[in-house]
Image 1 (spheres, helix red, strand yellow):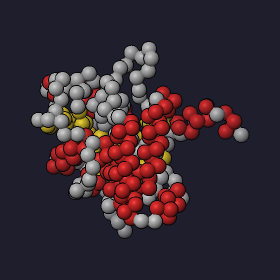
Image 2 (cartoon, rainbow, N blue to C red):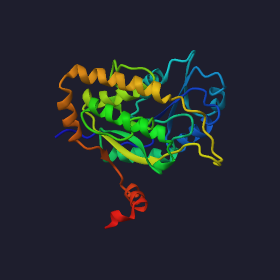
Image 3 (tube, one colour):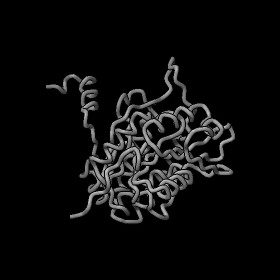
Image 4 (cartoon, rainbow, N blue to C red):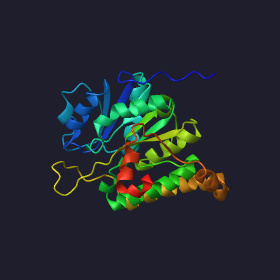
Length: 276
């Protein structure tokens, strides 16, 4: 019988936060992470707005790139440092404040319910707050990355994830920028044999009249979606038999962990006829 991975908790999980010009919200993000996890690693990707200065007095590990190297390089460096420190899993979140630190314990608990799986913080709660073009990009990205993984998944574009240590330790994972995050899902499934579970979290976006502001997203819908899609398509075509891959993928539905039933309740409130 295979031995189960050690139970995850705030003391053996590292939070990795890639940051590029995040002076607006980075301190709030880091303080929220520190309140829920003992080990926080910030990777400043060549910021020129004083991002690092905003957290210089906080008890974090701060890695700094002398120039902008991209999100992929930031995550690689963060993973490497987390493993060096002995982390059993790495929880990633962006530095702009769109990910809620309150979801850190929920992601860790989900990782314990699904040992060895990669957990995506899927923006399924209050999804109507998400701009339509972001939702379109997410849905299209899910379709393409699912083909690469061999099973369907939800919110492949979310940067809030829990990676098992063995996934973080994968070497020679190709792709840069946002393509790297897409490839990590495929490599987790194909090379590490890891399952992928989506945990519903709340969408957090700037809305008219809201007192909470976010900086403009670094994600450029058409440019980055094209980069991700073309990268995945090359891999899928390289394996051959696209139709068979598509059929097999469609037959394996996404795994959504909704322990409190909040997502089902929200869907029911939007469509009361489902009660019948």
